[in-house]
Image 1 (cartoon, helix red, strand yellow):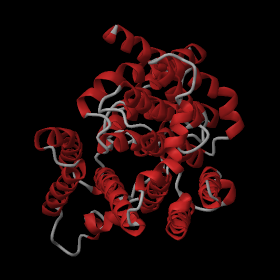
Image 2 (spheres, helix red, strand yellow):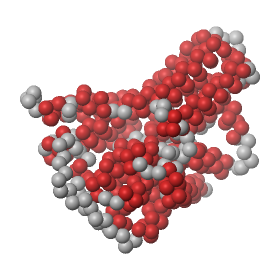
Image 3 (cartoon, helix red, strand yellow):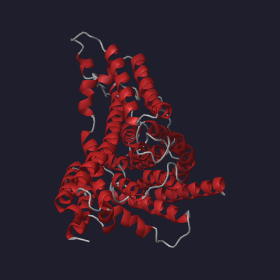
Image 4 (cartoon, helix red, strand yellow):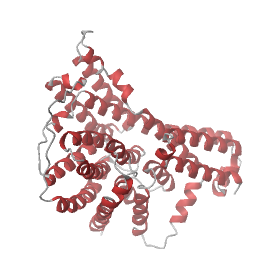
Length: 451
């Protein structure tokens, strides 16, 4: 194998490190992903068959390399575009609900003062909301609520950490709850109904165990909420009528839930459904918005204005990293890695259960998006194979083991200034026990069903 083959590996590892060290380096991970994508495809194009593994080069034979390169770029761009457009539509719909104050209908009804009771209420909300929305948005919304409910910083850190665990677990069991599950669903690795049936129980176990442990620690504790005196809410959402908030909340959540149903009926790609859902939300909110130009409050509720608030850097990151992983797949790196992992001397299915579990633990250290993207390129199992089902669970919940292991954790770290060492001392062991308990639950469930 040539120098170019190994150079591609080195650049990918270096780019991966830049993504993992985004905050210490102060370089947005989207920039690192784009540069990695650019360099890998450029090296591949300039090196030709020299960048491929012998098996891939032999399979190409005497075929035209430039046609091969063009076809693969188009193929991977098409697959990546499906994921990117789906995420863009889903993130915009969630942002619309938030901007119109739809989530306040839920959060304003929380008035518990017992620490244990509040823990289960917030955890349950985070679990089910992230299954419909996404774990990052749910975490941001719930931690914003914490600032109104809990004045003590140390208490907020515990509650914020458990919200991260619950949001990551909730996002793992539905096709639209976590970006890694979305990737598997859009790529045809899992079906919507099956992934929900097979991962909901492990996901529930992965939060029940940590919450039970922390409930024992917090028993007898009470929260003295903020009085709220002197606090003036002047946000646009505060002036939206209640009936409009309810309409936007029900409509937004309803169309998101209908996207998997749409795919199962029409067999069209999920991004077609999410774009149609976005169109419906856009039209309804335009009709509800007063036409009087003097109503400046409603100008900020226009969807064209809300689009500016969507996290486009995350969208660009997904584009860059998925295209970069595509090079490793085309050149044969991932096939070689898969063949190496297949040499593990453990009988099936336990070998692939072990691989999934390792990937989940690794996702607490490095970003789970490229991990899952790489894994999808390594294996070619059929739809709804147990490997993909457990991968969805492991990649979604494993990130909770460290505060930097998921987008939800990083968001909580940024909002509440949670210390990495504090999380490692107080939460990591709890999250790890919950993660392993859920993984064992999946294995036991599989063995019971399949004998």
